[in-house]
Amino acid sequence: MQQIILAINAGSSSIKFQAFAERAGDLERRVVGLLEGICSQPRLIIRNGAGETLAEQIFAPETIASVEAAQEIVGDWLEGPSGSAAMGGPLIAIGHRVVHGGADFAGPVRIDDRVLARITALTPLAPLHQPKNLAPILAWQRRRPDLAQIACFDTAFHRGHGDLADRFAIPDALYREGVRRYGFHGLSYEYIAQLLPDLAPAVAQGRIIVAHLGNGCSLCALKVGRSIDSTMSFTALDGIPMGTRPGAIDPGVVLYLMREKGMDAASIEHFLYHQCGLKGLSGISNDVRVLEASSDPMARLALDHFVYRITKGIGALAAVLGGLDALVFTAGIGENAADVRRRIVDSSGWLGLAIDETANKARQFDISARLEGPRVLMIPTDEELMIARHTLRILATV
Ligand code: ADP
Image 1 (tube, rainbow, N blue to C red):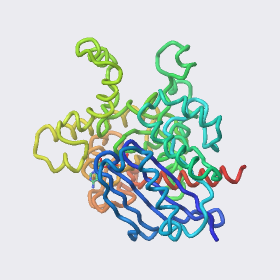
Image 2: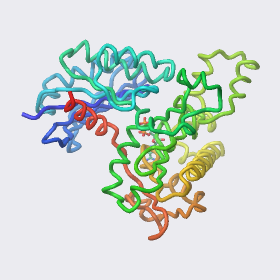
Image 3: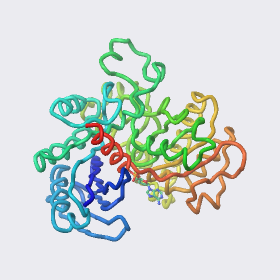
Image 4: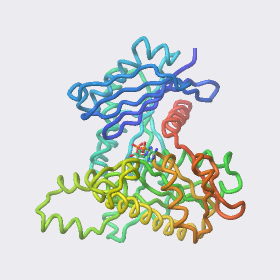
């Protein structure tokens, strides 16, 4: 009977989970689940590896008012008859996405009391995300203390950044206590970096910018398969605009909000994480689909600004890389919004990038217009598979 590894990716309002069977070092997807709309309109959908629906349920908001409550629903299903049948083997380990690994964690680790304390101590660096990542770890510790649990950090892939990229221009004492440019979305970037040698061998060892455009958005500069810089930094607020976050903003704006608007840290935090970005600028929605369908000029402005800032970010990272061999789009917007892809490539034409509109609309892998010059690629990301791979590797080393 094959052994099962569970990958959990818990976000602010959703839990994504996937179960994989391990066969001779390979991972076969058995269960793909999503519990979204926590606290608002909770909806659970679970499919098997072939995409067939195994469970679908809508809950009253008050029944799932926290990630903890959501985790119990997920755990009960997985350990119940339907989940056991779908997994087809005993659960042996759980890998978790953990947003912040700080300066110390340069790779995945098995969670013990010491590791848990260190992850918890990093909460001030990711106040909204880290507690959501910790909740399922604690829930599974209570539910199944016998299982190995592995933490896979979003910051780890960026830990090799050089000193220049890792710093702000602030006194060294703050750097030493951890005020650094960490970078996030590392599991997504690592997955893409691992795929590129097979999918695009001619450019995989070159200079690549990956645009992870989802609810959170960032860009990563890859050189010879390694991250050398990224637009996100100390927190997941920096860089390019996102669904509800502004991206880089003059710190003077924060001082203005404090002094002139009387806002405290908690209200500014809520503002920066939930009321800015595409949603704040448009005043309509954080969802690119809604903005594209709207005739409101503010929806147009929000999308124009999004493309403009990403274009600027690509230019900055191309400068750091000393040129560009490929631009890769991934995540919800990067994989699905063909018009956003086209506009970003068009406005980055000075780098030699050009898009084939037919291939772009057909969601092909290589959407470059030219045979020569830098490639334009679209690669669906798979953070859960990356978590499962890390988990398998750590299990093998223990
Ligand atoms: P998360 O960061 O939560 O994993 P995703 O990577 O799933 O988010 O990205 C979610 C975003 O993707 C949505 O907010 C939406 O703007 C965008 N998106 C999803 N599908 C489409 C589509 N067909 N066209 C345009 N945008 C899309």
